[in-house]
Every structure is written in structure tokens, then in C-alpha cells.
Length: 366
Image 1 (cartoon, rainbow, N blue to C red):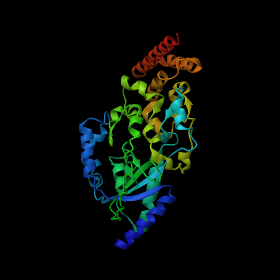
Image 2: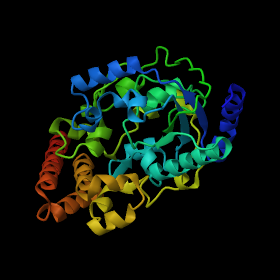
Image 3: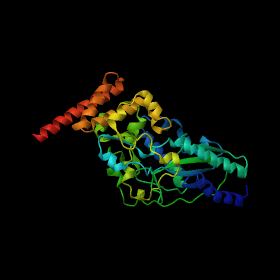
Image 4: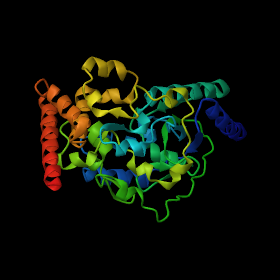
């Protein structure tokens, strides 16, 4: 295509993206050498924990043309997900009888929503330019999505390692189209974290070990979503009532005062009251209830056993007295005998922790 036509197409992409619900679009160059070195150091230090897939693909994660031959640039998009209708995150975290679910997982699973919209975008491009080489990614391949979004001018990578945009904070999803179209590259934007380090002390488990450094093995999102085995005992009290993911580093970020509420109808709706659900109620869901209620949710992929594992820890961290304490013990004891070895170990820990904390509370009152 002539350069003038490519420039015209690039200008049109913004309006096409907006029509499809994306909040921003940029075109990224593929220079990721520094990011590759950062990734390799991270992997060598073992900070990826059990996420062996992070190392499995070698340099294809940081060299897009090795993943999809012919790729010369990446179209990167943002999709806002802040659930404005959900119960305030801070109030849920303060209620230890409630379960906290990361805000991104309260609505329908974003993967299908974004993939369909990106495919629609690719189809519309094809209608204008004819057949072209491309591949759509939404967490579906080894892609350095935050680095590419930074290269595309959609924001900068903050000290908590999430992408931040001046006009949207960080409550958004990212998706990409790798393509062989030689589109004009968008300029990167300057970083604006400055001297702010609010995200670092806000992390309950100290997973942000230094600015721009994250040890996934300590991250609550990793512990409650990616980790398949037992949650290390030293981290269990630090999880509080977080049963799926964690948002603490984003909740304290000053730039999120500019966060945009989700516009897509499937991302605006909180499902099954998960924004402020009682832990004891969630712990009593049967496998069938888990599967049916969470069909179409990102949570479903961790399976019922890990869901219960996470809730058991939260119950152990919850109230020891009153109706909430009684319901926690009843729920835990109800599942103890029929639980798998993994779940039973967490139930026993939770019951013992509740007892120890109740005794300490009684001693301090005497």
C-alpha cells in the first residue's frame, strides 16, 4: 500500500476502535530488547514460580516475528473494565466476613469479549485493504502486552509493573493484533510515576520488591489464581479476605482517579453478587453451583477446589466471634470430612487459626 493510504488507514483505526468499544488504540514498534533482558533476569531468578509457560516459549515472547512470521508491528488496544456499579472495593476489604474478588473478574470473562472485538477490527481492516497477514491475541499467546502497549503510546509501565495511562489510570484490559501491514508507528508517552511509590507499601505480601520489580511468588493474584498447590503458610494471614486476585496496588495509585467506567454492557454488570458476597455462603457452593454460576466468568478456570482453598484461607482470617464467626466454623466443618487432601489442609489451618485468634482475643479481654 502507498504510504499515504497507510497513514489514512492509521487515522481511521481510531474511529473503528471506538465503534467497537475500545477506549484507545496505538501502533507499536517491535523493539523489545530491554524488555527481553528484564524478562530473562526475572525467569532466571525464579520469580515466575509455577508459571512454567512463561519460560516455555523462549524468545518468541519478546520477538513477535518469531511467534508470527512476517509481523512488523502490533496494533495495541485498551478496554476499560472499572465496575462502577460494584460495592466500593475498600469497604469490601474492610469487611472480613465478605470475599474480595479482583474488580476485573466481577463481570463476564473479558477474553471472549476482547477477542471478538479485535477480530471485528481485523475484519474491517481487511474490508479496506484486502487480505493481509495478522493474528489476534488476548492472553492467548506469549506476548509482552504491556511493553507493546507502552511502545504504542497507550501508557507507561508503572512501578507496580501495570500499564498506566494519564487519562484512564490502569483499570483496563489490553489486546493485540500482530500484523504485516507497515502502519505508521505511534510515539511513546513519558512516564509519570515520578517519586510516588504508593503501590509498593500497599502490597499486602511485599511482592513489589523494588520499583518495576515484581516477585510473582509473593503476589496474591498468583497465589489465588495461578498457584495450583498449597498456599504457603507464611502468606495465608496476609491474604485477608482476598479470594480471587488482588487490586491493592491499583487502589492506591493516584492516576486511577481518572479511571473510566466500563462501557461494554457485559463488563458493567456484576454477576452473582460477587462484589460483596459472604464468605460462608460462597464456601457452601457445590461443584455444580460453582460451574453453573461461574459459567462465562474468568474465575471458573481455577476450578472449584482452588476456589474453596482460597475461601478457606479467608474464613480463617475472618471474624472469630458473633454470627460471622459461628458461620465460618460451621461452613469449614461441613466440608472437612469430604474435602480433598489439599482443601482439607487449608480447612484445618483455618479452623486452628480461628481458635488461636479467639483464644488470644479472650486473653486480651481478661
